[in-house]
Amino acid sequence: MVKISASLPTYMKAVVCKDYDGTPQSLAAADFSVPRLRSGQVLIKLAATSIGPADLMFLKGQYGITKPLPVVPGFEGSGTVIASGGGWMGHWLVGKRVACLAAEDGHGTWAEYMVTSTDICIPLSKHISFEQGAYLTINPMTACALVEIARTGGHLAFAQTAAASTLGVMIARLAKRFQLTGIHIVRRPEQVQKLKSLGCEHVFDSNDASFQKRLAEACDKFKASIAFDAVGGELTRRLASAMPPKSRIVVMARSRVNRARSTRRISSSTMTNSKGFGFLNGLKGRGSSKNCF
Image (tube, rainbow, N blue to C red; front, side, top):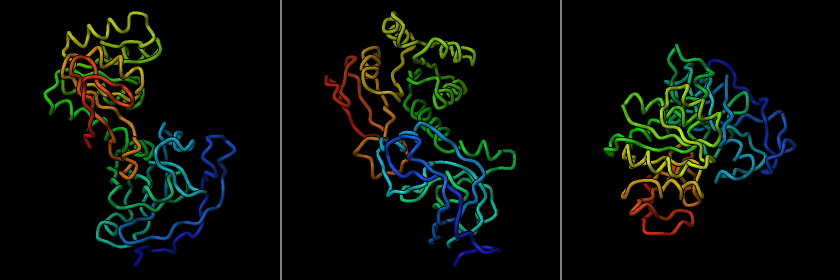
């Protein structure tokens, strides 16, 4: 039975996606039915939501998952739990401020209310604002997991692509706390300056004429034996050829073989570099590839 002190809303204002073509015309503000609660779920009155690259890819049908249309987009947000569909965790969460993720089989966070599973809600301490909470789940958890992979694997240094992104900056800051040397790859000169202003020492522009040589020298000097790649394609090949033998590249992507898995887990592949080469997404060589999650 639903635990709530007042009647539940039946309708809500929401942004609705009507087509996976990525155009503004595919989105509309609409009155939408509030989904019914089931056991193990809670109803959240949303206060803030985020818009990230994953959301934009979802709107284009390119994120690896699609939901029946029309659908409310949005992967993460924050708000207050106002009702429980049953279960001890749901009852405990009622009245609490939480960071939350959208269920893979349900509507998202671009709405007044959202129903989601209790196991993807994180209670917020009082000093964390709703705006901060709306970004608390995907990027921070990913950054923690990747830095932990580097630490527990005994790596002294790492390289990362898309280093000027929100996730890249989080990785850089967290790595400094654990005294891991970072080699940061970006695409524009202003991004180099951005990261250096944040205290990152080794930052390289992949469009610079000397990029490949400087990257290889840095990877060799600091023994960067693991890399986190959020770009893929040709840049992955260039990264692999610059790294020492027996290095590992963790490619952060939502591959087709992992569509059934939760979007909030890191879906990745690893490429072991046997002599600066391997294979992943069509790259063939003497390396090996496997799923690590």
